[in-house]
Length: 438
Image (cartoon, rainbow, N blue to C red; front, side):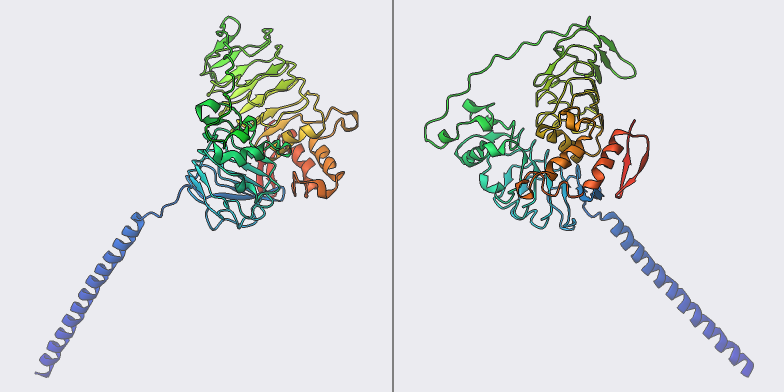
């Protein structure tokens, strides 16, 4: 009897253990199901980010932030405060609010071109007392006052073109500021869009005194007859379809760029002709052009708007011409330029060469070839960078408002030029991968 009782007790203990195990496993399954559900749910909730993370890097001792084409609508709070250059082109910024950049007190250049900016508050640039370059072209600005710029006493390069400027009393102070002789590099090529009487007139040429006189407007500029460009004579040049659509106009005794070149040309060779100057908008309809060869023409002068419209140009050959310098603005439309040939030109090392050097230094991805001084004799054979350094070393520091801190680290400039001039290797310099094309 005792044996039977013991067997029955053992049976009930086993059954109880079985129920606990089953209930425990079912609870675990339920919990796991819940947690998996949570995980699945959390996986479907995507945190909104405008685009890929921004790139922060150091080049020649200057810290850069590259946030181009990130669909940004505002400045992020976690960006480093010690930035020297901020690249925000091709985003969706619509408004610059007060103190938007106030913590970036070391900033020297700010690129805001190709956004949707239509309003800039008066203190938007507060704190940027070291800024020398501000790019606002290709936006939607209609009015702006001089007060916006008072926080940037060292500003020397300002681009405002391709904005729908409304030339009325509200921008009188801006126009007055731009017309000061000391501001020769501020707002060049910006033009009125409204009113109709002033449409097409440069802000620097508008009579600002008449903008605020009620009922009185300056006489409209006398319209110049639009030059009739001759139809393109296909017999002069050869068109090749492969590997890319190419127009070969070499050695045709051309004295100017032919008119009405097919707009879908990808490569244009105008080398070994007699084109001694490039006029405004010579290539404005050639949106697909990627390679332009103008070597061996004897070119003496390039109008600042000559390359307007060449948004996709990647390679430009200006070698073996008679160029001594570039006017301010010549390279401003070449956003995607990768290679620039400059050799065999009589580059004159004086103050006018600074724009070209400054542009190349701030567009470090452009590989260039042949930028050496030929004139005057005392600088013959020098790299242009070496000349620019010597220019500022000879001037008292209190007379150098144009490039503050730009040349404080001079020891690397010559090495930088050598890397750009004599390619063939890939390596790291100051944390940046540098690849040069030979």
